[in-house]
Amino acid sequence: MKKATQIFLYIFHPLLLTTYLTTILSLYIPQYLMLPSSSVRTFIALIFIMTFVFPLSNILIFRAFDVKGNYQLKKRQNKILIIAMTNAIYLVISVLFIFKVQIGFGRIISIVTLLGLSATALWLLAGISFQALITAGFFGIITAVEVTFEGLQLLWPIIIFALILGGVLSAILYLNKNSLKQAVLGSIIGYSIGFLGIII
Image (cartoon, rainbow, N blue to C red; front, side):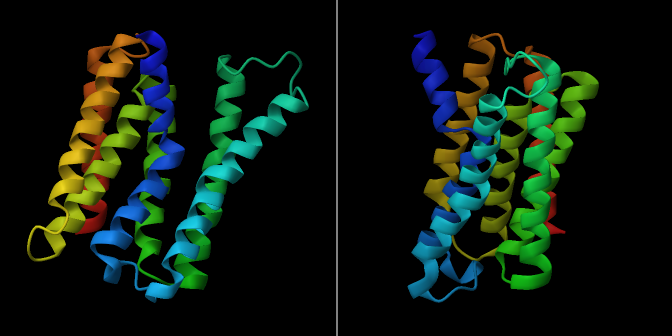
């Protein structure tokens, strides 16, 4: 059971959520991305590489070269360094999309970057659940996008994301990664950032 719970958290790792969200938007509200239909698959692949493969490569390189002596991912100093490098990558991607590419995705990736920075700060200061905050933030983004469009175009994705968020919170508590207070506070803050970032 513990192994299955860990696998669940890996499947819905914060680095993969941007790809999932991009795929959902391309299927249900493609006009939001402001991309020609012929470019959608290429765009999703690009997002996967930039928001998952690049940060993951940092972690693997970090491990291979044994930065700062004995490498242990669970050590706080090493974890902080990895998260800082990941946030730096997302900042670069945000700047690229906002100022160079200038498509609808720019706002989303900038909110995702803000979620990462907020989660890092709150984790360091108060031990707030990083994964709960990020996952709830994506739930906030997708519900806010639904609000901005008429109809219930994202009803099923919203339901699925709600179930994913519930699963992530349950997994975090089951594995004793964070306290209930830290997980709930992370969810509330993350959802607020994601939702208001789209609405405002």
